Length: 316
Ligand code: ISE
Image (tube, rainbow, N blue to C red):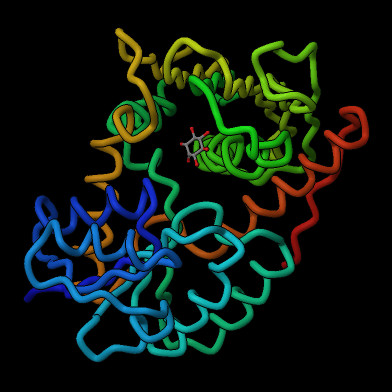
C-alpha cells in the first residue's frame, strides 16, 4: 500500500519534508502541496512528478486524493488545520510547536477525545535522532537520572526572531527532550537572560539560560544561543547517580538544523508513514505537544518576570 501525503506549508521545513516524501520515504508518495505563497507551492510541486497544488490548506486536507497530511505552516495556523485533519479522520504529522498557545493546544486535546483512535504525531524529531536514541537507551545504565545539561546554538536568526520566539520555537526542543529523557513532566521553568550578544538584533535577549524542575526531582539546564555565529551546535549531557553520557555535536559543526537532523527527520517521517499504514501513531502525540506548549508559555512568563520560576500548569 502507498500512503498519499499532502504537505501544508512549504517553507524550509515543509519543502524538506516534501522532498524526503517524494524521494526517500518508503511506502509514501507526495501528491499535494499548499502554501500561503502560491508561487512557493508551485515551485516545490514542479520539482516532483504528479504533485497537485491546492490554493487552500483546508481543501488539500479534505481532498479524497490525500490520505495523510504533514503540517509545516506557521504555528498560529496549526489548530484549524489539525482540527480539519481530525474531522476528516486523517493521520497528521504536525511540526513543532503544536500550536501557539496552551489554550489552543488544549482545544485539540479535547477534540481528540471524540476520535476512535489517535491521529496526531508532533514533529519533535530529536526523539528519532540516532545520537539521542542512543542516549535514551543508555539511561538505565546511569542509575537514577539527576541532571540534564543542554546546549542549543544556531548561527543566526532573522531580526523578527525575538526572545519569545527563542523560547517557543527553539527551547521547545529541549522541553520535549527533557520530558522524554526524564520520563517526567516539567513542574516549573525559569528563563534567565545574561548579557546579550551585541551581534543579536537590537532588543533581543540572546543567549538565554533555562532551568527546568522536573516532577521526578531532577533538574535540567539549557543554554539557547541563536545568534552564536559559529555553527549549529546541539549537545546534551545526562548525569545519573552512577554515570554520565553525552550527545556530542558533530565536528565540523553543521550549518543548520536541516543538516544536523537530516537523519532524524528521515527516521521520523518514515516511522510516521509506516505507523499510518499500520493504522497507528507511534511518536510524540497531542499530549506531548500540549505539555511542551504549556512549558514554553511558562518560560516566556519567566523571561518577562526577570527569571523567576513559573509553574507549568497542565490540566489532567
Ligand atoms: C527551528 O524552528 C528548529 O526547530 C530548530 O531545530 C532550532 O534549532 C531553531 O532554533 C528553530 O528556530
